[in-house]
Image (cartoon, rainbow, N blue to C red):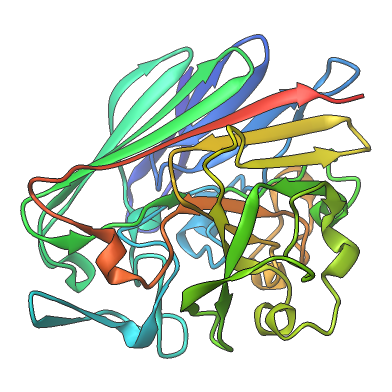
Length: 337
């Protein structure tokens, strides 16, 4: 079902598109490709929402936490808001102290997308980012595909360009599997990663990764997210919690598993990406307004699993006219009793 959601401050009509099957119900906005709600079954076979979002577009237009959106052209921070391609320097808008974050002042999350296909279980949205937008080079055509398949929410992104340019796109949905009866930091988490990238005080990833062994970043077996989140570890202090790039071990089919003992909900993530940036909503107190279901935003109410490449590593995220960008992801929902 398609219905009017809200009107932007400059008069653009935003629509809500519902997709659903017997396991999942989702609401998608054509503004920022936002997943406004995502309902899955609990152990009593009742649907409940598991993501953070708003009921009014005015809060999405000023959305510091980036609730539910597609982030681009580049996810994460670009150090000192500049990069070089073919010996030419490009200066970006600094919207995070001296750094540029999540696409700049008006990234993909702030754009109205075209709907190319829509039916009861899938939607494809597209957006043409023109050469020079946010001072990035090249015209970039991006398509986002959301699809339901049984108990799987599948999302993929493809992008093509006519000029060499950095592209590193992710989905920035915040999850809470507990029916919002507790913070998501009380969930249990497993990440199949032996290594992670350290960050500096501005949360810019280093050039090299480190072992998770004997650190708070070892999630190779299930543990409660809260267990080490207040530790004296320097990396935890730099991020005010977790905000780090984990190097996914490709010998495992599953990248991430997150579980709520309260609802018995288990979410499993599969991806073709090399990195998962695990973010524990460390600054959600900055969120504007009241969330859907009359929920007040607070730190660590939701957590993000941003599958992508390492932020700020320009050489790794350069896409050319001969090379298509493609990211494939599955969120699989089940009950673990």
